Length: 144
Ligand SMILES: [Zn+2]
Image (cartoon, rainbow, N blue to C red):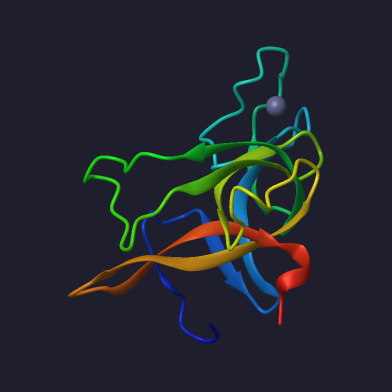
């Protein structure tokens, strides 16, 4: 997946860079907290300088927790070829944990603490938009 930015389910979450996709978060200039997705202002009540700057988050993390989604979500959440999948809570370091689907990791392979890498993969195909993608996390060693 090189060149043109992929069509995303939700805009503003991912930037496609030369080294692959990166999540776009906010970094507070006052208290240093990282947020994902981007925030309009720092919600930390102890923070006095609430200015946030856009920042790209680490593209690797470790699996902190997960849940298996066994039931098909409502039609609003569209997916082709739906099958049960693993929804992970991924620790990106610096106190930030991000929820995302795991790609290519079945419920028998998933393991707390496993190394994961950010990926962008098609969620469904739309007649007008083509492949519509979302961010996921894949096993860190699987990258070709
Ligand atoms: Zn702050």
